[in-house]
Length: 113
Image (cartoon, helix red, strand yellow):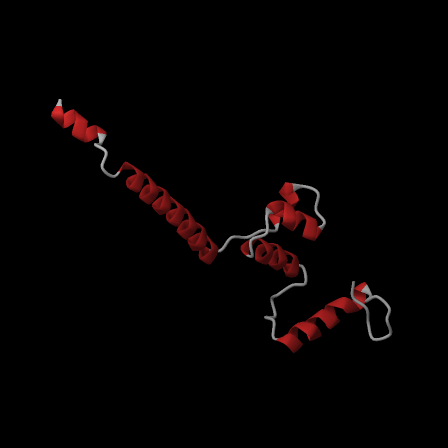
């Protein structure tokens, strides 16, 4: 996946030093591990609208369980999901109210009885 200056793959013994240097070069925090890129990729993929299957294909995974391990949901995404649910419920209620306009409700019919 990664090669050094001479075109050879990084050795396990030197990868840590090279990762630390690359991380510092682009301003990533000290605690950010190379492995964290996998979690970040999964999370960004789903937050961008990818389906579970789409995320699995991108990551080369064959099981939903494996894919779900790497997905994280943050508070911002939960607000987006809640907002989407709220918008759908409001739209459906408005559609039903518009359809029922001019019709008598069950409560009205009971009061007349």
